[in-house]
Image (tube, rainbow, N blue to C red; front, side):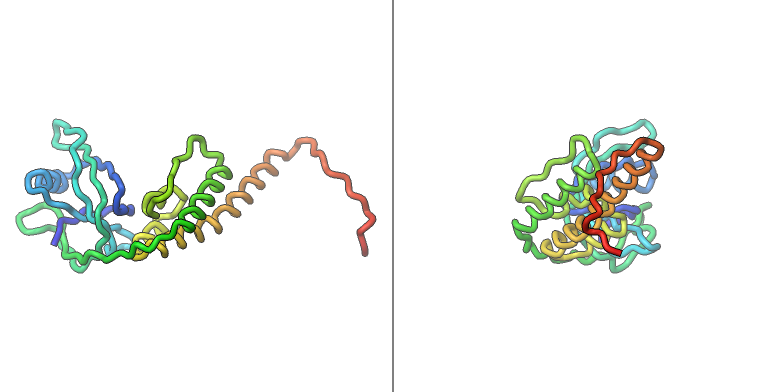
Length: 211
């Protein structure tokens, strides 16, 4: 049974998460984390359900405000699945629930990491991103998951995968399907920008044409 802080976002193990705490119930949660050294869970609220989430530890309170609000830094730890949910824990304002922590298989392969980084580099070139983030091998899939244009549903699907090999394969497949779409959008943009301008066409020789 752990405190739960549902959000419409996905938090991954190892992720550094900055939160602005303003509701009274979560102000109480942060106080309990500080005093009792407890962790809490952030289950992803998606499709009107709570199922999978990530346990996080409070690392530090960055700033406190006169009204009780605060800016805090947390670190993602372990993926869990929600077994039960209560709007309020006994004598507390915040929610909680019983969770099962999920076992993970560390079976990532360096060649897949290299392939993933190659595809990320191609994506960033196509998107003309200035100062793109730099990743070095070895790394884990969670480190790049927020940086490759996944939708919330896709990020959630990645969270549910229990093998690093599966996650790397999933991200590579996503990029291989996304990059051609980005290229086509770039081509469409060039066509739109060329509308009304003089065009320089390559001449055709008609020797190989047949009716």
